[in-house]
Image (cartoon, rainbow, N blue to C red; front, side):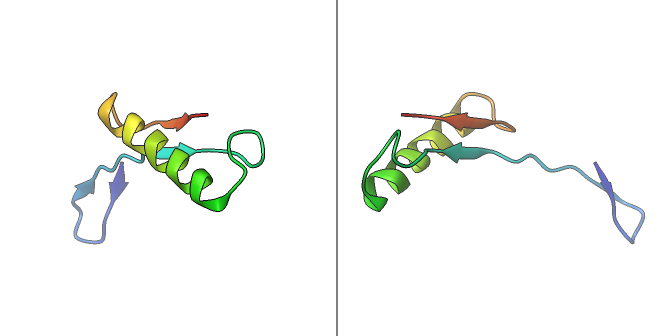
Length: 54
């Protein structure tokens, strides 16, 4: 939680997706695709987390 200059409280969540090279993918296209799938999985299974997919 953050306190902004107006005195209001701001709450944020962060979701992330991770894929690794060369363990998960051998091309940049595959790497981005898997990271995107992992991000979507993080968002659809509760948000505010990081997911690794391979």
